[in-house]
Length: 369
Ligand SMILES: [Mg+2]
Image (cartoon, rainbow, N blue to C red):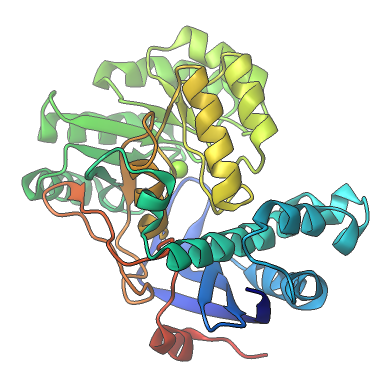
């Protein structure tokens, strides 16, 4: 079997309602998409995504520089293909272009498409191809806790989610005055009681002094984890914070390679790894990070905004992973969308990696230059 065609698209999917966290306002999701076709008619789909501009350059990178490496290759030689994409065939030995940033976004999408082809050839969903472990996956909800919701919204959203069956919800922090965050967390904890899990997420906004001062205060509300308190490149700062507050430290959505995860784990700067297959170089690197975390007794709760059909499957096949984030976006884009019921995701059943995009969604959301 050989790859005979490489198609790419860029989709722009508007959200029903603009939301905000400590750093960003989000009104749409931009999706670079790659579709690989083989000479015997199989289709492998991969994607990446952004909450702001720039994703179209990942599509451009595939079109201009990566297609030529893919055409004619056996799709089941994934590791060789990816080495060729990372190294000499495409960008020479230049780390600025070939091993960081946009290249990782593009290679992540290609890696997914190659896994999707493998699963479809095996006639199995990804979680069975990898070796299933969990028979369902717990969900936690972030959509009730955006910084742009009023405190009344937070309380009513949190109560509604708990009554839907969620055991865990996430609340954004990083308001202009942290005292406001304290009052919001206090109100939510009072609304949901002490038995439910409440996570907090600063989206990298704070410096160490602010995170230490307010992290200690937030410990009053027993956070299940404190997510991205600091600049994600500051491993030492996270280690210091972790040694001085009670809440477990979670990082991952802003880390784009396995070596940084290794260093966080080795420097005892993290409790929970939120590795995201769309942020590292795809499913292949996600599995490497999850395995390294397992050997170090660290659990994986992947970051996800839109990619639940992929991450639910990865978690289902990973012993040291559980709970997948849910935000109800892009449900009309996936061939087999997932929504939690009673606080849990059922596992996908269609063959593939959960990355296939509906043809009508491509027609509806496609941006043409
Ligand atoms: Mg986050």
